[in-house]
Length: 113
Length: 115
Image (cartoon, rainbow over all chains, first blue to last red; front, top):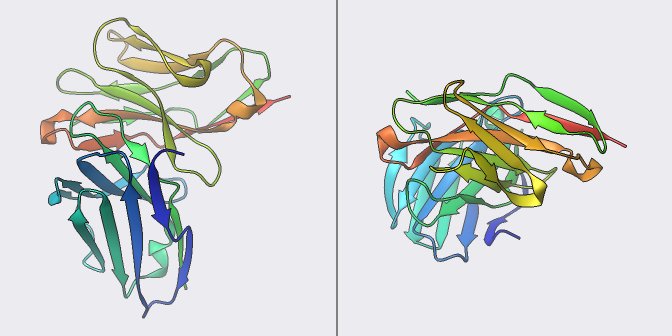
């Protein structure tokens, strides 16, 4: 148990659906991250929030919309996804930027039909 | 730009034998290097990191990594492998050029330890 939880653990959705992924960290960290992990590809950083402010957005399509209402919670809102968006979505947190270790949640396995 | 390379997709080793998982890096300044492990159906777990100091870094579960500046390598090692070490291992470098929030991960090396 890393102190970072993600719900749901599995999600199947159609291309016209709207769904949200939730991440919560119980570590008192100031930074939170969304990553996409696809088969045989390096982890892709999607979004970074520091003190609830977005500081990094790696050219992610607008069908992915992050929300960070406070330093403990991070959401990823999904709408009109494509089958190629099927992947494991990982949330992570760290105390701050730089040299701090990141703590990862177990991920949400997303399948887009 | 910062980058890491893990030249092996897969490493096979017999239980009890030493293991090495290779990583090379390219950075424009001081390297801040990490190793993470991912077990099936789990997120990544931190193993160890190199910031400065001793070239041999000791981490969790008996793992260690050797920082070699001249060869720009940060190989992960363990003297005696266990079947339970079978997992996906990621080398990573912190991108300090962009404010330090971005971690660049290698593609991962799958380790199989055979009993």
